[in-house]
Image 1: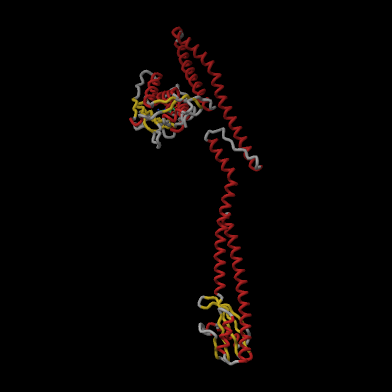
Image 2: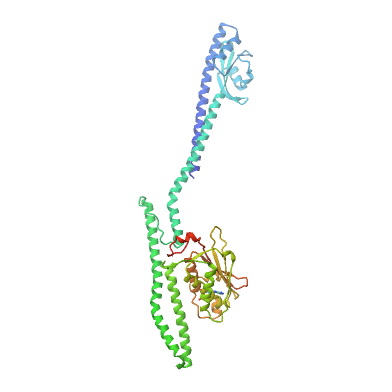
Length: 471
Ligand SMILES: Nc1ncnc2c1ncn2[C@@H]1O[C@H](COP(=O)(O)OP(=O)(O)O)[C@@H](O)[C@H]1O
Ligand SMILES: [Mg+2]
């Protein structure tokens, strides 16, 4: 818009000054020509009274003014002080106006593409007329130079307008850019983001302070909620432990109970255990929500890590579950991972437990390289089963808290809480990795986690205990 404004303004100013200048110059030139012609006409008429040599008189008159040609008409006969042009160069209308009309006149016109001014003056004493044509092409050159200068000026002013517009809009939009950048960072989970203070600018200061106040409140609210979940889980833990211990005592004497009471006791025990697990999982999730989760990273070999985790998870599964085949892609050798072993074991046990609950047991656990580029590869671990799989609509939702898919209800299994995969996602996020569900080749479910690899030397300098894990 600035460039357009500058263009319109400079073009109109340029055109105005061009036409005004041209008008003035042509006017000046014309009046100069007219007065020159009158002087020459007077000279010619006086000279002719003394001598009868018309040609010589005209040649002398011609020399007085440069770039002009003189003619004399006397009773239908033409004399000229030049060899270059004939009287035909004088416009016919001017000739007849001066000769028959008997009045002095001038005319600006173009002859073979060059601008000319013709002036005619009647000389009563000899019943003739004096004509003179002036070449004004030098005026054309002057105007061309002016034209060029104005075009250059228009271009320069337009460019300056564009540059100024860019600078000014960049300056005025800068605060909006930083607000949107901060909003993106906050949406991405970085609640500590604030706008830099703009105390110098009263308009911006209001925006900055209300934005920062809003984020403060948001952060406080989120933290309060995370604390609340964590506090509730904490408070529930000790009564639940007492309850579980008492149930164990009762279970040890279940023979002395009636069959009905024993059944009731079994149901109660199952629910208390499920409740205990839920509270444990909730506590863990709320810790990572409030940012107080600690992650202790160790350098490990991916194949070794997965084999151990699978073996550990296997011990918590029903005894009749067949152990899955662990397949390590040879490409993975030499790649190192920095992981929190406890969290990794939880990830594997949750995935294997799901495979056993909903997919008839895991069929394979595969370790391979991620397809990222660069010197450091990420590592993928996938758990497959040959069960019914996940409907596409559920593949994202299963990672939500308390979400239980239709596989869970089909089996009528009351053991799950819907927190297993949410916890997996949380552990993976703490490692800077990602997790997703897809369909296995067999048609069953396939859960894949991808953890970023770390170059062995670079990771050494890193703090091993922190809130966020490797980037
Ligand atoms: N291997 C699997 N095959 C089919 N469905 C699965 C599988 N693993 C998870 N699911 C679905 O994802 C849901 C969420 O899993 P999860 O978060 O572990 O909760 P839970 O196991 O307590 O139900 C399950 O209820 C189930 O419907
Ligand atoms: Mg589960």
